[in-house]
Length: 256
Image (cartoon, rainbow, N blue to C red; front, side, top):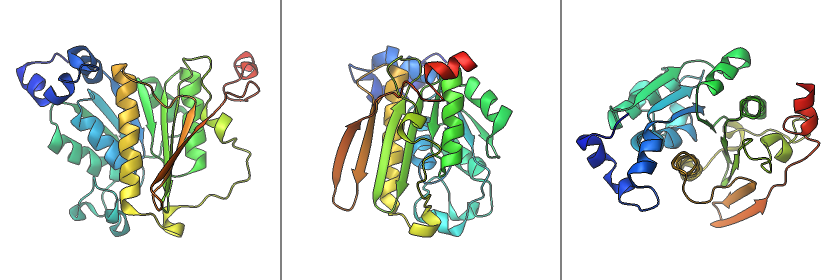
């Protein structure tokens, strides 16, 4: 997508940033991003990526909008109750920025469909709410060498990490959270979630994605950000790559 006069004006506040400029914005507008999940995290992430001019957005979610979602899932209106979330969020993004292409996938991605969707994009934002999906998305991103921006939020606590298998030293999601770990899985419907928390984490997911696409700044590759919304505190931990990881380790690729 060329930056005509209208697009130069639309994205002028990005272009004014010396770190981004015309070249960085051009890279953003030429990018394709998959967002897995159109809920609490996916809504702010997708809205910011769409407003920022990511050329093509793929939104995937098999769930429908429910009344209980509206407390925090800001991409859906009351009138969208009962509608597929990916379709509803796509409409909200187009209302903000009709200059980009938004494609909705009204299904939970898995298997070959997930592999094909990841293969078709430059970057993946994981805004899902369960470990099974996160691990499946991670495996596809590692296999296809696609950077992955992963977020999670529950109660007042959130976390954010970036994985990029194009970089030899980068860990993957499995290095951080092995899929055989016996950790209980708690969801918002069971534990609750403070509504602005998903906005904070989702917006940070968009920020990390845009930095990767534009090639600016330092991202969270190899680091895990932990956000405490109740005490307003943040902690960043280093995440080493596990050389024996069955997903991204050398043995995994030799076996493949």
